[in-house]
Length: 174
Image (tube, rainbow, N blue to C red; front, side):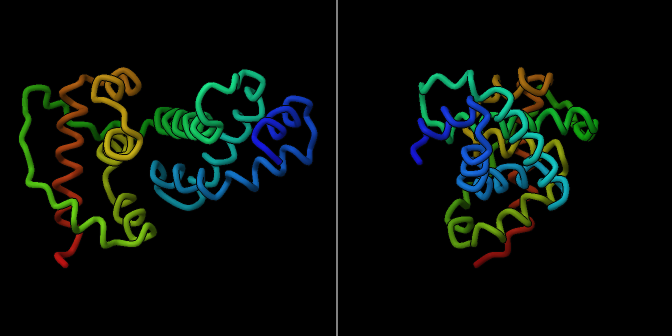
């Protein structure tokens, strides 16, 4: 089934198309959800809520950009809503005027398996993890993150810097 056929089938509320969409994208989207979650169970809940949103809003997909990207954006927004709902972002430290640069060790990260990285990212405090995921993985700017999370741009930058420092402590030298 092509993406266009999947969308048309889901708009028509055909169970076979909905099942195909879920089977095609659930594994990748679970990875997205887990990056924002504390546990497998929470990630599964976010995934389920995200797919409910996908099915509710599928008629709004206009074909501009990739279908997978559209679903990913819904999953990220669902994860952020879950974080806000559970008030997990309370651990932010507002350091608007503090910035520092950490040395880059990206070559170490490349040697890890995806599951190892996911486990390490999940150990980050909620605020650090959310900003790290949005900036480093999803490609949001600090301004976009600040707007989405209702924090200052400086807080986003400091949370990202602290996340990097925390990850550097957790990643063993190889």
